[in-house]
Image (cartoon, rainbow, N blue to C red; front, side, top):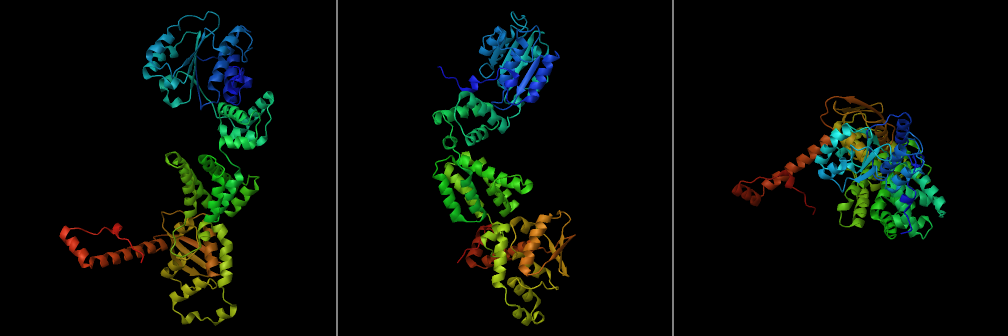
Length: 545
């Protein structure tokens, strides 16, 4: 076979050619220069980050014949370097622990430890995937690993260092390799394409580097596939078809419809995506990535993408976090779903179906997204606001207190009465256009007083104070509902009658009434008496007429 894959053809031959891992390379070079070599080294990290490659280069540095002492950079010209590179060096034993896990294999390997190397400085044992060794194999290795002859060096590599016994790790100098940054993978791929004289575009490089997920070998494998798929040329459309990815603009359109609670628009946008025959799991990952970018921009304002900026300004941060969690949860269960397309559709439906619990009838867009709802609230207020003359003709003193509160809150054009009581406040609270998080927080607070346009609420000592953002949204909704600017003061103490407690009490009263009505039924009562039964509260459900 004349063709050689890129990962093998361009495997680093010196430390300077290794991509990333500067913290490892610097330590190894310094130990060689100062002649402070350890008897055993453990290289750990995820797949394709350079564990075995660094170990092989290190072995060449130790046994390079160009100098009388080990060199920080091998010459790659002497017989020792050539033989180690091709795997023919008699004193460099590379072992795959996954295929030689037994204790007999380890004993056979260690039989030659006592003999000095014939044509090199060190007898080097490279044990790859060392975590695959059996417990007895590790025990057989321990004594030799702790006190090896001066001419013996152990190099071990593993992707699951947590499976290696601590007794082995304590005898090794451990190096943890990091994942490779995306920009370094991109630069490395670009340099190889230039050497191979292959045409490419920047978007193709970005797609492959991103899909590599920190692994150089994965990136080069994807590069081989992309070159073959594109018939020797890298084009973004071809690479997207290979990787199952799509243009982010499709996802932006989908997210816009979801943010606006536009189910029809979201369905059409999702249908456009599915018509591209893409990997549905990849689509979900891109959705998660878009939410991540939006969330970062809301906090750091670091995005240059105009569509991300627009979404960050129009969607409430709390809604972004909720949608992010929904998408992440869908991805975690994606592989157990029998139909990938349905899994993606249900994820979008969950985002659209989310509505905060409220007794008031509120348009979906107002519940779904407080920021997008602000304009709708203003328009609604203008439409329902009566002329000024009608307000002058109103005489609140002639109307009972509770009725005044209801009329004013419904009209949204009059000040809150100063003699507001707890029950009236609870009614007003349930009619406010609040997001789920704000409603949940302030529903636990009890009304205290309303004096000089200042609303005083009381929270229990166990609850923390709401953030400024939550207070702002609450006051904006309250001011929009009542037609005047309201200030807020919060006290601490024992809470007895809050909107949440009132709602629970009403639900319990309704349940008791339904239960009493059932007990008055002769047939039900006869069944209970005959069988010694009882009515379970959770089983009582209202049936719509």
